[in-house]
Image 1 (cartoon, rainbow, N blue to C red):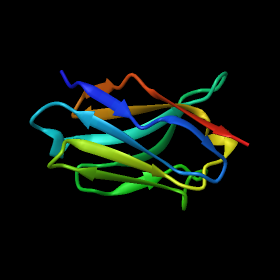
Image 2: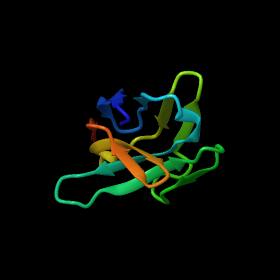
Image 3: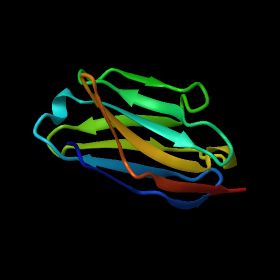
Length: 115
């Protein structure tokens, strides 16, 4: 069982920045593939960014050039740096960990971008 604790959400004006953190338990953190997803009201959950165990990353087109995902294996933490935020980035952001056939989700953190 992997425990995930997300933090860093909040209210920010358009054009501002936030950094989300996802701290994971377990001794196999370096083997985890980790993604940030988001879900806006009335919409499906969507992938925002993902980083695999080797450090390779991929991003949704809507956030490319604005968001950066990174990981610190020594701290068992993944980050999502979000710059140039837009009102359409408003959503609950979730951290997802994959290890082989297993998947764990965090509880989510609210990000609200005002215009």
